[in-house]
Image (cartoon, rainbow, N blue to C red; front, side):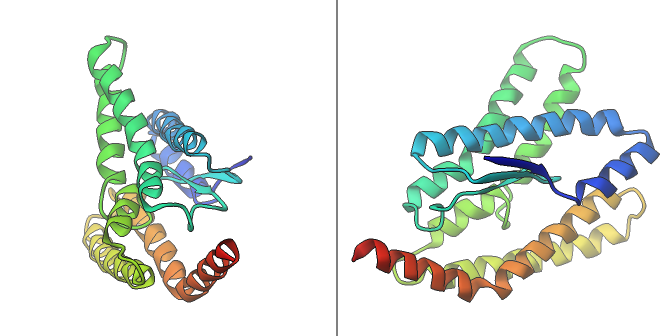
Length: 204
């Protein structure tokens, strides 16, 4: 499995160094690794092979060759694996006493709330997209979720732009997610064609 950091992290790190909040993001980064470990463990339990893992500002993205054709409930379990790991870390931060435990707990609450938002490509968005799927209308459900996510992220980006420079990290994140959704929307037909081809091969 390949492991890498997304280039978008560089401007985020630079902003935090300038603002003096690098130690804060260090804790966030460790929390992201634990969050992603939850997805990896879940993928292993479900028998899904992980080709690569890319750490993003909001969590991570796993490249799993069989994810698109996996059973719907398995995709839901996989999406919830990360939030489950974050929830465990939140539990320990609340129960155990150690320096900075309150701050660690706040970080976990933030990551948990962020990743459970019903917006693609966040975990909550993947869960909602899977739940909305009906046989024969998978592509339509995905398109609806992508359009919905882009609309919400556009509104969020506009709102955050009124509070610059304090909202720079959040605005960068919202714009990054918006670009990801736009890219997915543009190539949605190719993705669906690939899924149909793979299903046809497997069912022959």
